Length: 501
Image (cartoon, rainbow, N blue to C red):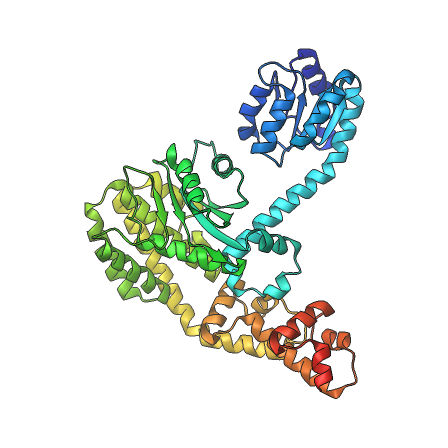
């Protein structure tokens, strides 16, 4: 996007620079800084080009606002020779480059081409962070923290979010023409109200957003104010749920599961006439215990594959909600849908196959597309299908664990990944991790690493190999990682253990 108050400059840059050939798209051209600031949320540009001298809002002021609200956007200033010293003030606003207007047709393409690789790395970094948050949200409790710590993105999360809270936002902001536009509008609003916070945002669906927020001491009231600010103009569209404070990013998936469970049980602990703000762990409102117990048993029965109890509790649920408002019933159904989706993800099932509808269509049913009767009927059918599938899977779980143990016994000296094991036993990786831990009480990676260390100790007693050789023979290429792993499981470094021998 570019802004310049001189029409011939705008037209010249638009027509005489080969934007597409450089890999860019010129998404908009404006007369002043105010116009470009108004359009940034909708366009979401990577680069903004600003003339310094413009009416209404000049280039420097626009650069300051962009740096505060959208720090990932690269800003280039167009400047006349006499203004160059003045333009240096923009260093405080993280301006990426200056281009002299008298040479703009030569210099601007050069600057943009140099900036291209940096923008590409930024995009890749942001994508890697979203992918890591998605992984942590569903699988953090099953990972091998020593192995993951070699990943720079993991290290960044560990440093920034050592103490954190999860904030789950249900609903959607704006009237985007499509799913992606709706997500962008909602994420932009979240970034705006969380300005100054260290956060990461993940759109789980068009109707659910997870915010991972770093929590310093005494920030609870500040967090409450931020959430209220988010809801202030959107109380008809949103519900915000704040999880407990946790320490250690390996707890992220536990924190997320706790929020979904809490929502499914205490979905009525919000006030239709006020802010829809729920804090996990704060007691249910009086008179809600009975319906909460019904939902709790209903969801637990579904997760255990108990079709009879699931059907019975769903009938009780249908009876109870007759006295609730349409909005409350739809919110309850949204919470139950979230739990159904969580189970589908854990088992690696496709939502459209199990629930006979995709994610977007499911959200549409809950909010607008179905009558209450058909909505509840669809959820009941989906829950019974899930319970039946779980019952079928349960019969094979003991056999699955046996096959995993057999595979690990024969292959633990290789460099194994979770995908390797999951592929060998023909199941989803997340489901494999969860079932193995449930059945054995031990993380799968802990079991594999412990076998590697036992074999390493056996080879050390022979006394004829160097530590790096032993590490390679048990499938660990990085000697430093091998040393960390060895100390974790024995209490000694490899050198100390050798001296003891």
